[in-house]
Image (tube, rainbow, N blue to C red; front, side, top):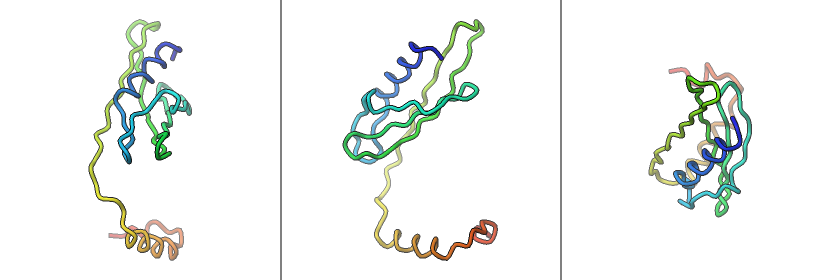
Length: 109
């Protein structure tokens, strides 16, 4: 992916996405390039207000002409949900404290 494509993707990303916690819009300075493998690109965005990291994965598709590249960034719909309660944190802590590493036993239906 060339520099211009990456800058276009970052611009589109910062226009579309908002922090899922506080709703703050992102700036390009908050975006970190993590890696790219076989056309998949991974970025991390950290909110300047609440510092919550968000990972963004997208695919850069080659056009018919090898010098032409297209990109697609899919907007993630943010689900409105209730904050995690103190009791839920305590329950999770109790469950994870007794976890022995056996996922088959733990997730047995």
